[in-house]
Image (tube, rainbow over all chains, first blue to last red; front, side):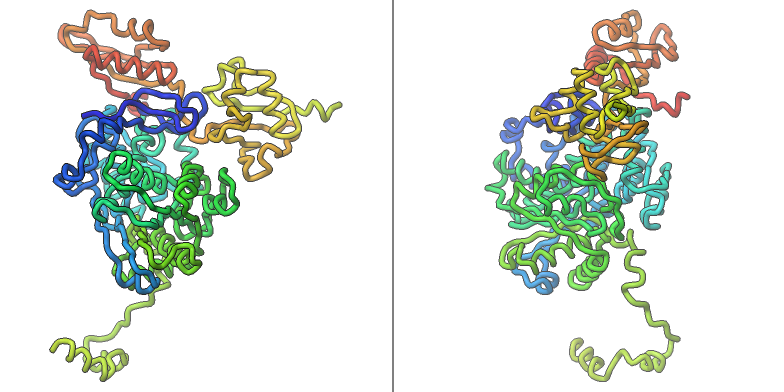
Length: 421
Length: 176
């Protein structure tokens, strides 16, 4: 039942036994899970997966737990939608949306990583969990910690969107707002993690936590009938998700569940926080940190932990990286809402905006299959669009008042009647 | 003459202290960050393979700060330093090795007479320190502080699991 044999440094390849560590003692490189793919290949089949309950845990063999999951057992298996409206608006033939804006329970892809992290924390015997977050992770850790019976400490930049603050506090956590950027929050948390014996999901539990993102990729493949799209656009903050979607595709191929991975992966950032895009365009493989300034706060990481590997993924797959301005982000959110009826957060606006840009630039061809990753819900970042969507018309409850505002022209009234006939 | 002997202070991260004569801060020389690193690895050769890869480049997951400013905001290794500056070498994803940890061990009756804690200290490169304990005829528990490298620590955890001791981490804010 156990397919994990240890941890390995991604840089110098030194190996470690499974424990709550994330950094190589020798070269300080990040650690990654070692799986026994031969053994998984023998045991896991399409049929076996398809017969299991519809959650991210149907790919359990490719996740780093010893036993069954104990936290977040219902997370994942979010809708994959064949787009019509947005496809028409963008002028493309085959467009899909993977919609983690409705992931369970906290409406972002972070529930995937947190359910792995907290299930693993339980296996290690931790009772307190913690995280550094730009908001979505905060919501998810607070909620799943409550469900899993953990005490939690959550560290965020103090000026987050109200929805993300409330959506964390409601779960009865200890929320600490730091006067500083996410990168400063993260640095502080590294020090706290060193001094307190807590399970910091994105610090000492990171190698396990990050694996949860692969299920976003597994689901895409399965929902398309065990095929992958030719172009996948992914938002980038710390750069982990993009590398794990790619890893997910490659793993399925390695264990014989996918026939080739013809996918190009594209990284999307906001222009006000684009360290990975800038490095990609400069043709270098090191990241110059930035001080982010964007409405896409969930992506506002100026010193991305997995930036180097995100660049590697984009280049290895033959993809591209692009960024969009705050104005384009809002346009992207509105476009998705008005063509598909999906209200995504600012990060989704970034992904839609970048997709539009790459199609217009001719980098993504219009006649090939494209998938846009929607990773978070718009109800959490309402401030970003508050003044951009108009206002309701307020009238008294009188027919004459309604007719005075001039909205229903005679013609529209007739169309309405015809439509009902 | 004076220029050549420009003196800066370099803060050494905990995992590398051993290789730098157990010092937290080293007075080093050089006019740029690169020169200071050069001086440092010549003076403490053990640091070289930890700070630089096979190609001689500074390892990817080491960040260097001059007076709290990441050198990537400046001119990387060419960043000039002046008398009295402080250089910090920080693992990019900090945390990790040589932590002091606290655990509560619960012993089943058949193990109460075994010298389990002695064994941990002798079979593995770990220093143990008992913080509180309660042992009766049928059950015993001990809150233990353990200091040492991560790999030794995880070996000890495996040993404890194998012989049937229940191990639970103690969150520090509770105990103090």
